[in-house]
Figure 1 (cartoon, one colour):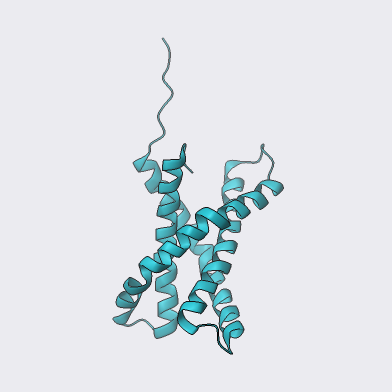
Figure 2: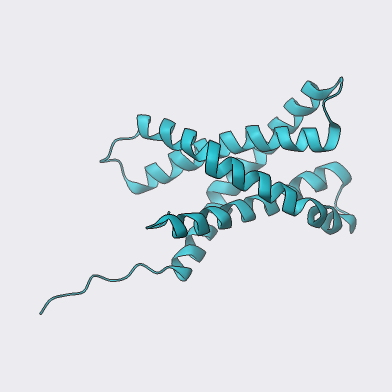
Length: 157
């Protein structure tokens, strides 16, 4: 979303921030339970996770996701189909990458690395897809259109 690079960066940043916050709460609650410590844990890991997510989104995942999506989509397809297809591919790519980040950050590259990674990958996918499609995507698009409203076409008299 966005009509230029600045707007695209704002939209990507909003989307990443909302997804990282949502997924951080989800992962911390899975890890330690719903305690008062959740907010402290989420706050402690938020900036590093957001930085990794933004870099991955901008330089890796969005290019691959959009490339795959546009191989499947036709220019005549409805906008909602385009949005859902790109969002689904983005979630898949980001879950694969961010689950790897989370596994390395919390467990390291030890004997049980693959088991931890596959467990986290599955759990994250279960949450990330509905979070993106039902909450974060629509919320980010709503907020973005409030910040950058679409200007009505000027009617000539």
